[in-house]
Image: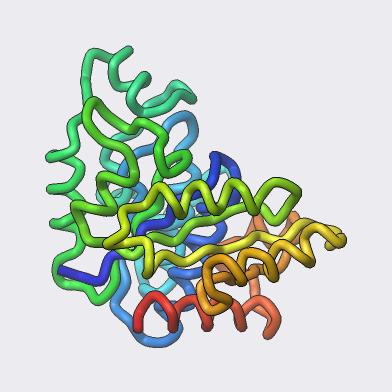
Length: 247
């Protein structure tokens, strides 16, 4: 079984996909055999497509490529290997699956993830919603993390309130796993006294080595998430995070 990194968050829309793609890029750059998946998607499928695109970008001379409406290139087939459960309604997977009459259960998702983690060094799993968002009839992201013995990577927006939110999520992790969890703060466009001091305070509470700050991405960088050139300031926290989670 691969080393499993589970990307979760303090909330939805905090930057999980951005971090998942950037971290996957860095792990591939340093020579690891990486697979990235997002087992559950509700609404659009762009998150899973972005993960697939960054993996395809490492495969040369692939004749089976298409481009989606966001400019992401990916194989004509293969998205279901990244995202086997997709629900059109933008609802939590628990509710979306119930409305289709196709309830989800932990054992089938865990089986998919364990199979995905064979024959690779690292499996990057992007969760849906926050740590305790109900994903199926009998599980949430925390249950998957425990079942896979994964290293949790908690993503949060670096803004007012993030200290409380981050400590609540970290505290909700089982003690057997909490010590290895990493926190990633996604910087706002304009840093202020709040964003500058959050890292310091959270470092005091969690240990400075476990808190990472990713610089703000411009809109054009987000649109070209799988291909834009990483600056030294962008690569540095990713290198530090990769070293921490793969130690």
